[in-house]
Every structure is written in C-alpha cells, then in structure tokens.
Length: 458
Image 1 (cartoon, helix red, strand yellow):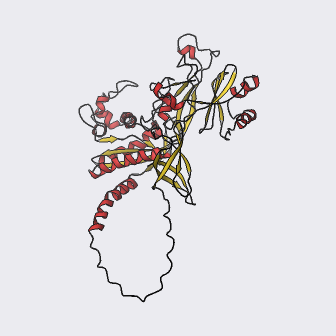
Image 2: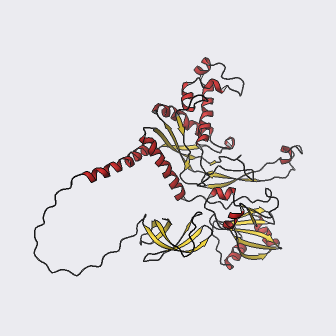
Image 3: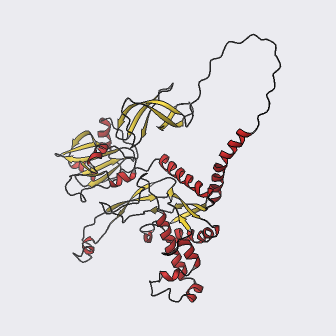
C-alpha cells in the first residue's frame, strides 16, 4: 500500500498489519457484495481481538483486490497480496481536508488516478473544532459591532444534501470545498454572494417597471445584459461594480454540526460522452463516488454600515436559498435550504453583553468598599479539632498536569495526575510532545463522579 501524500508525512497514515486469512470463492463473494460484514468475517476479526461495531460496513475499492471495513471510527483496509487477504488498521486523520486531498491510498502505486480508492473513512469533524472556529468568527463580529457596523445573522438547514466545489481540482475528479486549515465543509462568502446576485438578476427579469425603463436588459431568450442591472440602485448598492464597492459584506457560512454522506454518480453512456460510441444500453457503467453534506445547519452572516441595505437583502436571501439553491447539482435536489431562523437579535445581544462585561468589572473595582465594623468580642469557647480541608473539585476549564503514555498516529494517550489517575485519549495532528513528557491538559468534560472524561492540550 502507498499513500497519495508527501513522503515526509506519509508515516502519519502508515497502516499497521493485523492478520491474514485465505483468499477463496466464499471470502471473495462476502467482500464483493458490500454492506454489513458476514458472520464469518466478524468471527475472523473477533479471533484476532478486533470487535466490529453494529455500524460496520464493507466497501469495495476494486473487486477481488481491495476492500475497506469501517464503522466511521475504526478503519480496516483489506488487500489481496500474494494470494492472501491481509487486514490492516489505518489510523484516522482528524482533518477532513488532509484525508480528502493528501492521504488517499494507492495500490499499486502505478496508475494513480485509476487505483485510488474513494476515502470512505473520512469522519465528521469534532465539534470542538467547529466551536472554536465559530467563536473566532464571533470575536470578529464583536470588532465590527464596536465600530458601529450592522449585521444580519440567520441559521438555515440543508433540506437534503449539499455539495460545494464538486468541480474543483482533485485527483479523483470530484471534490468538495473544505476549509484549508480546519478541514470542515463551509460555504465561501463569494459563493453566497454569487448565488444571491444571480437570483437578483432573475428577479429583475420579472420586474415590469425595471424592464420598461431598461428595454435592453434582456437581449435574447436566455441572455441578459448585466451592465444594465447596475442601473438598479438597490442591486448596485448591495453587489457593487467594477467602479463602485458593494455596501454589504458576505462572510463565510460555517456549519453547526457536520454530517457527511457518500453519494454516487453513474454515467450510463461513458463511451458516447467521450465520442467513441453511440449512446447504447450495453456500455459499461462506471460509478463515481463523491462526498456530500447532509441535513446540516449553516450560519450565514452579512455586514453593512447602513441597516437599510440589510433589510433589502433579507427580502431575497431566503428565497434564493430555498428556490435556487447553493452549490452543484441543484437541478436534481441538492443545495436547497429550509428552516430559516433569524439569529440577529440574539447574536447582537450576546455581543453587547460581552462588550459591557469589562466595563462592569472596572466599575466594580472603582466602587467604594463599605467600612469594616469592629466585631464585638465573643466569649471564649473550647476550640474544636481542625477539620480536614476539602480538596477542590475538578471543573471544566481546569488545567491539570498529565504524562503522555502512548502515541498512535494522531491518537495520544495521557495519564492525568489526579486522585483517579484517568487515562484518556485525544486526537491532535499538530501535537508533537514525546512519550513520557509532562504536559498540561485542559479539562473539557467531567462526569457526575468527578472523573475527567475529555481533555485537550492546555
């Protein structure tokens, strides 16, 4: 096995050999039919101390050659090598962009495009990553609000599936727009602006007053003169032109929680599209997998100096996403949104509270303290024996000493220096402390018994 990634990072996804079993007709049929693993395959994994979850599935990379057994958490590639079936354990990469673009598996390493398996082992990004990114955006909004900038904030949910960037450059010729640092799917602000601008042009085509004043706007059945649209003051003020800046800023739309789903295209007439044969029903079907986001909520944010520009934009934004859609394959149901929830009021109030907190803290410090009264003497009492001081409880946000016990790819095991000595695993691609190092861990979760259950580098 090899990986489509730079040689100096290839060790990060080096698969670990687990066990082998015979290649015969029964095993070949079990693997080639895809779906839930057979009882025989589950027993083989059990004998080698590997328990497959109920969600495990078998995917075919190349019939009779390559397969993948995965449950979304653990990934076990199976390869036919020397007339045996070898099972490997592949470490997972927390960054989805790296998985999709840099750590694709090749077997054999000859014909790259033909022999790369679709990365079905991509996992949804951890909620902590999205939380940090949205907190960063909120901090940016705070700066804008401090300068008197107005905002319009709305949450909307994908009605079915969404794919943005399907036609982007990729070795498998199907792609998805993922954040180049955080690796999460998002909708670039330029894409939001483009969709809304195109929708607005369609609205102008139905505006009789505008058409009467600008008869040259429509040049043909499917052709318009976009330069004429700039004569509409609302259109010009929102989107701008080559000579004038638009008054509205379109920010990137980030998800609340990501749910990936693998989809498929199945061209029936490949030879016809390539110019080799007529479109006949005997041509070989070549399924093409691609990655989508399913039923995910995104937050859209718009900024402007004047509230009137945002008010005009609100009228058309929801219609554009609900009727026109965003991204690729909107003609077959992708990219439409529903359940629009205006979050402008809640977001603005939260930003105001954050802005006022430092002022209140300063006022509390400046407020004069009440004079202390001399306490009246009390009769002498026999002192009670000193009580044992209670140990402080561990709460979320505490930073606690820990020792790194083990590293497996990006999975890092640490032992917390607490009364319970919890051993916890966290995932971090950029954490390079060696085994045995003494480090600080930030507590993310504590159970009812006071045991630490989740940490991140402090």
